Length: 600
Ligand code: TEU
Ligand code: CA
Image (cartoon, rainbow, N blue to C red):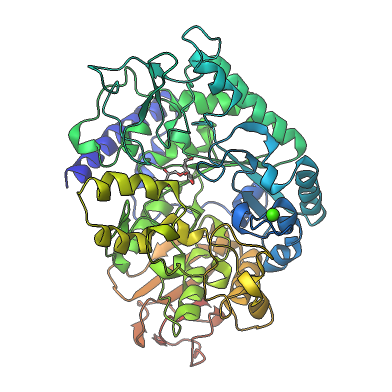
């Protein structure tokens, strides 16, 4: 409760800041007007729309995608080998999770050398072959820019920790302790304090994540110039942009004061609100991004809806899009699973859509490598309903006014893993939480594990299930993380062969989306926000109008169309519908987990 009111306070502060900055720019205050309207204005149908608005992105978590040399770890050649699979699905852009040299304290989100390929994944020749294979197929690659922190094994940090007067000292944040303890009360997301004492100098360094992930000091212009150089290095190789890891965290609070008690459980709302974040992003845009044709998407952990336009309003020249976490975190608070309702989900979608406004653009995603499997938290992963509900979720995700980001395996309806004990998990976050919550006696092991089973990041990190061969065809060796035992039933080979599969529903959705500008650019309107069973919305562009109806239950539900709406034809159904629509019908009987796009 305290956290909620703290968030609200921050939000209203930031809403004020938005109004001020827009006035300062001499433009009407459209951002906050849009935020108050129920329905956002429709952007014009734009044949000149930037490519990244119409792109369909597929996230590859390389460690778990496809292993070609039998060491149990996915590799770049494994991605190259599957480009035809992705192309056939209808994907045109790949977001590659970190592929850089790393000691893997956090699976590559701890980078030792930003210009080198992780040896487990291959080498630069493999990278260039992957890129060439993508170019040949008209696909683009965006890579992960992880520059809030580096690895403690990065050359900069190895130098930095040596002495207080080392030329690299200021690449990181060092402080004296306070009364024999850490400089302030900042917690780390991976357990314990965000400060670690370093023996060489007796000072503490700041790390928002693991101790092996020291935060870079963006106050130092040399650090910013280094990052710009790294970006140019990869853009010059031919990548088309970046997904920016926890990018709002790069600007630290002036003076690093203690967090107020009510902020301790969610420090991200403070970490994301440093005073110079927008200055740094505008500088990055000026120095680098504006000189290339790129897609940028910021992982906006800690950013409220009201703040979003500060990052994505095109007139501000920062980022193209951000990832909002409110939707994927609807059913959890940290490691705790919580209940969610359909009206809450709809309200979140409506708010996400509004924050795009006239000058911004959104992302649509239901999963990634940090969240459990989409079908297991928003769908129904029981054998009976898994396929229908996975298709329903796909219909929802791919008919939003946003650039979709598919996560590997979701196109097959891959599910959460049946974890038993602590020993089944690999994630560094789990180890930290175990110390903070279980070993400290705050929570029982049983309680923690029961929640973790449903919320753990490892649910999404189990290897891709390519076929019913041993280990799902992911590797001929021993996989680094166990393959979900349901791979004989859930795998790509069988779905590619089956026109009624989840895979083919994704493929058809992407095709329909490409051919239907209203499904990309059209105005979004939720017809029935309070309905607890059916998500009903229209997408409208000029005189073209579509209706999406999704039944989120195991029951048959009769849905009466609002006055004045008349169905002209069915555009695409997820295979659940039983009756063919009578043109002009005023009511639809929706089968369990039916999801249908109609033309009005
Ligand atoms: O994640 C950012 C992030 O803060 C959370 O989503 C995080 O996964 C955790 O659940 C917070 O409790 C990004 C990456 O996506 C993630 O894989 C990395 O571990 C993290 O940053 C550090 O680089
Ligand atoms: Ca390998």
